[in-house]
Length: 193
Ligand SMILES: [Cu+2]
Image (cartoon, rainbow, N blue to C red; front, top):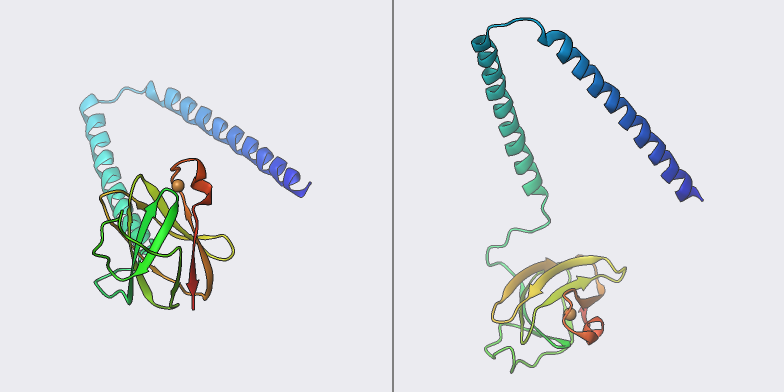
């Protein structure tokens, strides 16, 4: 009931805002019509508009650069420069996950890993993710079901994913790319000690 009431309030406020915005548009149009009758030299108007356009462009450019700088810093990717504490090879296959510590020299088809692995907390882990058949998606969920990291598992290509597990516990690995009927049963476990 509370949700419905809140929804109605949002709908009501949206209606009021839309009405006010429409009134504002009408006012602007009326103002433009009332002032457009005045004769003004075309070249001087052109000059004014160009000057305004230049300023507007500069302002927009500054805003874009500032927002880009701020938003890039907020991205949740840690800068990685070959400092991973542990490397894990992950191979996806229809319909299972195979994981093993270290870099594997076997082909994805011959790779034998486990669907359960134990890793340390507070350490930077680098997952080398590939597939033995079709596209899959390696997704790690914490014990509360929150997605903490994911990357595509592609055949003939290795994606690198870095993750630092801040909390100890059991993390579930699920596939986020539909890969056949048993896709939903494709899971693995990462124990963080
Ligand atoms: Cu899948």
